[in-house]
Length: 357
Image (tube, rainbow, N blue to C red; front, side, top):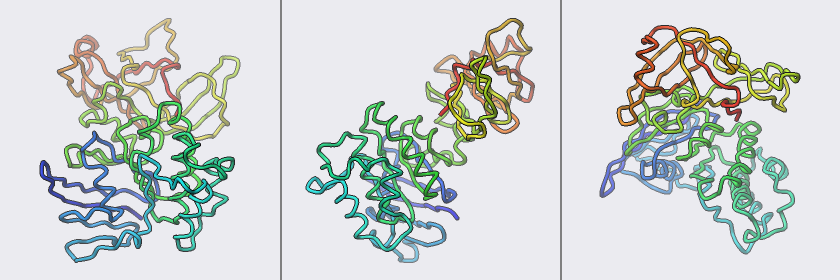
């Protein structure tokens, strides 16, 4: 099962030509700067924008094919859409807003009580939208979209209007939805933290064109692609909790085929997790150093060096058995260590530098 999108549209100042295929179910993030074409892609999939040419296929069903003269009306596409602003009906209670989405939907598997529980909004049902926080309004908007029984959920920068605390509040609910409903989602964002926490597949869009697509951990660690060129670049590793060493205040996590020590976590053994390791926190070495506080000394293979002339630095890709690390160092450091593509290298990472998402 997959999501296939191909669209071409000419605006007055630019032309979009966006094409990608993503697995379904799962969360596919469309990432890029404002104006790159992300929201246009979502509006086309939802049927709210008719481009010059497009073909949209969701799990084998063609929603639009301009070459064949096929264009399903938005209400026939069974696509849920959540905007940056919640767009709730102010005259209805939270329950009324949720029921509105449910009344207009065909029978489906997503139930009212299930949505209320997953989104943690039981205490809000009797309230009006103007009494809710931004994060609460977005949770209700997501619930209303889910109760329309969509085959696909589209989220157009749903957290961009929220501060850091509100974002931290709602991200766990989105992760719960992903795990519980197994509903395909397309998630538009220009915030790396949201993408790394939620996405399974990453589609990078730049100036109206797709410049990279694939599993999020792979694309995020490609030094030749825009995602890794950011100041806050880092590698994402998918892993699980192996065990705890309470006496040492540490937890062991397997990720990328390596074992990492992080500060003690309150998570059960076997729990899956994602870890992010910022490129600026990775130190390279040619041999194991002695008497050092760094807990994680991981062997790898130097896979690629991407020069960053403007920063007077280089982005180094380090291959692990089942993943990739990034390190941002100076060219002088690479020369002093005698490192070369294809050769061995050691990555040194402090336990406190590893972010467990």
